[in-house]
Image 1 (cartoon, rainbow, N blue to C red):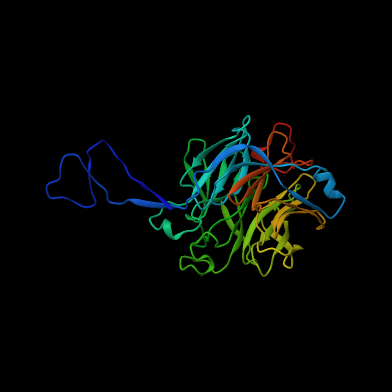
Image 2 (image 1 turned 90 degrees about the horizontal axis):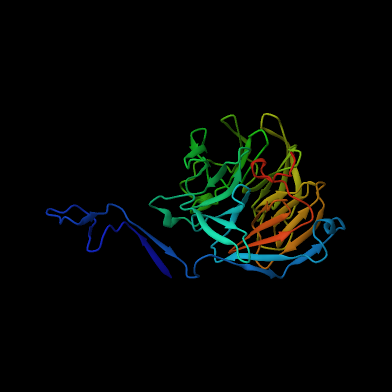
Length: 374
């Protein structure tokens, strides 16, 4: 294990003290607080020349062939992360932003030439408290763009949803419901009118559902419209991935719960409330230790769901079309590149990409010049 200490060094020969001195030298620094960060061995995350990896595509229906061609290719782009999550493509940057909540970092990946460029975009990305060592996932999770193209971030440790302004300022969009702190906002999606929907399980808290910091007695799905935060569902133990149908009539929410691995579908009302909630697809009996994580939708209305054993592709009617299985389990994904046909895959300690035949639905503020409205 290696360690890093962070402090300010002004010049050689500087004395350091952690308390007041009766007769201090002229070159001393009084440090009231210092943070010691520990990292597991494994090196620094790095981009690699896109390398083809093994991929298995289970095809349960001929419709899967229209999505994934007969000779599918998946490429590894970067590796060495603690845990990749929450990706979003940002056209004005020509780059993918994605979270490593365990490392408290947002990374930026630019596909450029033979080897992409990887850099730190924001650190800390979700928490800078003195007790950060207690957290497994203190950093950001879900990322998306609002209709104006501004980055919106779910911050686990800070237990809030924020928006990053063009000048670098941070605007807090939501951090409390009825006076009580949120759990740890996880994933999020905007409707084209600016209404924001997000999930709030306790997975970012050190002891999750049993954490004494937890103030709300439930895990919620919320909508934020015109500055008003509404609880629109509290029926799921672990609401996680979230996505809107292409016509924005339905909201899909995945449940990270080993006992109930379901994707719910809700009718979306104009005021941002939900109705007619029902189980869209049930994966509870599927083999695999993972429950349901990220969800994305393509322009034909098909769902791409991080589920047990792989990336499940479901039709708008709730039929399991097939499963994409990569060496590292995919926990979240984002449509990227100019035409929106590249699916970037956040897969544990790695980042992959895969070209598909059907373009995806991207945030309104993150679409290429040729993409139409929903």
